[in-house]
Length: 231
Length: 273
Image (tube, rainbow over all chains, first blue to last red; front, side, top):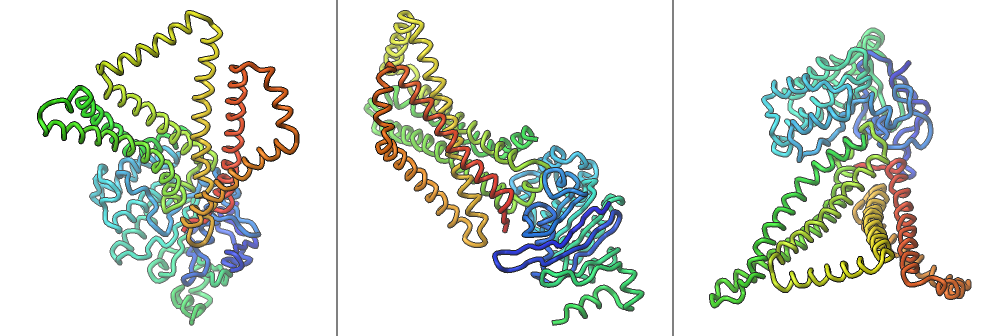
């Protein structure tokens, strides 16, 4: 069974279409790059998969279910912005995730926090922007979820932090699960991807494995992206 | 899951409300010194101190009341409709559980605020002759009533229960009116807060309009004649019960409408920035 499935998915904001007839599937064990320029509909797609938006038409299924209370239990979602409650301390945040997610691995989260020298008693609001993003990522990647939806996980952080984030994703995801990484920073994520979905102006342009792109087109994903989305 | 949501909701709101209650109690001890005669000394500085202590107490009461309202609105807005909404609205809980957790915790803080103000007032009045006499007088009345008739005891208790139920439901319904206005306003693409404030006043206008229409309809349909003929069959106490129960039913309907609006907009029209 596909972990994420879109069938003729459409989403309009008023009269403006954000997604138009998008259909694809994501299988378990794959790391998929959801790639497209700014405003192409990547975040809308991820919000739809999380039930934060309702489709205008078509269908989206997560672990075989329409997005809702049950599907939330098998999805680990990293929003594009820092959304963890900033009044909480790191320890309270661990309590929070442990309370709501049965698959939360507290020991793994504590180990990663210790690795970054983050004190459990320190409040999120006392941390720098970069550290907050790392803490949020640690919470998301400490779950043994079936699907990880990571919206711009490396946007707006320095190259060293990018490497840390990517190694955290690779080192901590459940191998049975699928990971969808939305980004426009292709060259940074290319090395970790199995598959790519190109999306532009709300329409799906391409779904292919990275190996297939290299073999058939003789170019990297970054080069293909630049060619497809040339302005 | 509702229990867990409430636990974290109490954690989030308690860090604001509990220190405020502490300030209220501390200022009430200060104000107690004033009521014990701080103002009737010959030292001017003690007069000034007495006035300041009473003012601090009054400000603490206002602050506690205002903050319990602000916390109620702010928690819904910040926790579900702002950035934190990305975490909260993707938890494996239903929208109903989200709303109920906010509603129950807000109602508990409202009740706690009332109790803390009563406690603070008791502290201010502790051992003051006039207030002692007043409470003795009230106590005498109740003792008199209880000696007279079980009828009054039963009805008095029922009035108290009906009154408390009405206050509790009324505060829940008021919260839901705020929640509904915020949920509707934040479903728009731009100027979310302006729309929310606009929706709140629109709801208020609609309620008042419907209330007025009910009175006009009662006049036009002969309901007033029916009630005029029907009500004299009741004695005063029964009529009072009927009015309280009617108010409870109206409050439940009023709250249920806003609950449905809030749920619909959070489920189907959520539009986080």
